[in-house]
Length: 507
Ligand SMILES: Cc1ncc(COP(=O)(O)O)c(C=O)c1O
Image (cartoon, rainbow, N blue to C red):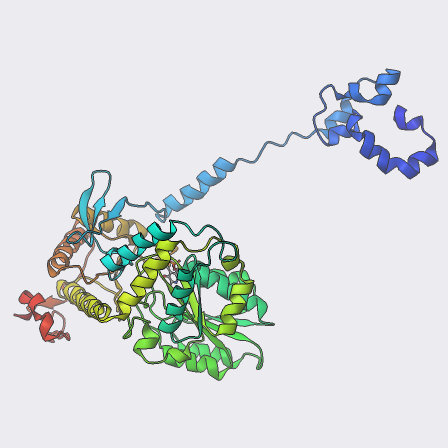
């Protein structure tokens, strides 16, 4: 049936003003409005019906065609399925209740669970205990008293304090670069810097190490720049890929010095030299090295005397420096470009006063003589743990740094061993997918300068028991100080000052 309302109008008028009429009266029309909403008794609002009382209802057959009843999306079911998938492959993460203690004599212990059981912490990245050092604590507390707890806004609006600038100057000095920029974390620093740079540089190509941390992968993905992945810490593969790259095009070579999960250290000089040979900029993540290596704690580049070979260095204030936040250091113009263009830097609240003051104090502390002494003790304890694992015949991955990974294949197995250790008073988190690839699960130990030889001995005993308890077979490499397989005497470099730690093994 033709619309009695429109039908009463002149045809030319309807043709010319149809759209406007629909807009004005469509909502009152019992037929048209069904396309937009459930009508109820709205037909009474139709100016035509009200006036002429001709039609009160659209025919049923028409409304059947128009009204669709699609059930709403089942969001909760979707989330439930996602979580179930994680639980099925044992990669579902359960955060332990662990409150690390800061008081003298308590560190590196924590209160665990709801009963506050005392455990020794083996997996914190507060590597040197800077988070509880009195100088760092005092700086943070005084900053709160003077300036409050929060920055009060983005850097542009309320958060650019003198302390912010002092901290950036200190970071730039540490890395021997003209400028530095701080971010809310190093995840953000890596993501924001890489995505912004590779988007801005025309035609930029990225060369990324296969072992790169998720933050760098995220930045590279977000840039949408073409990328090539070279084998982890393999300079030959990097050269091979760069040799095929077009000349004169901007390129970024992106990698870490100390690998967070294996403890491997990259061939830094070689990789930088290759990158520069092909006209690329080097972006190097020193997150697990800052505070820990080099005379002033600037990282592997400082230890090797090659800080100038890194074009952009990124670091964290959240691990060895015991606070939170991340940074890059580079040329003044590059830093100013990121400051001016990176949304991850621009549109977020600045780091708060206690973090700025605490980080500044921590960087200065770890650059000092006390920092050097903490680093020496740290490395000595790392050697002791590695040797103790070896002597006990427990497996360990060949790490050359302070990170000591003990492989236990299977997400279920590694979680069980971590649980057994917790029962015995040792907290170490099981590492599984997606932090490492499936089949490369591990426990990642990070002994610090405040772990005592007794704690390490107790950990080894607990590990042996935990392996037995969970039926994990391991070989005792050593019998009476020699290798079980070839009878070669096992030697390890230990300084005279460390001998006291090895009463059993050395005798
Ligand atoms: C290699 C690496 N880079 C970057 C980050 C991110 O640092 P932040 O914790 O400051 O976000 C991490 C953190 O674990 C890391 O391991």
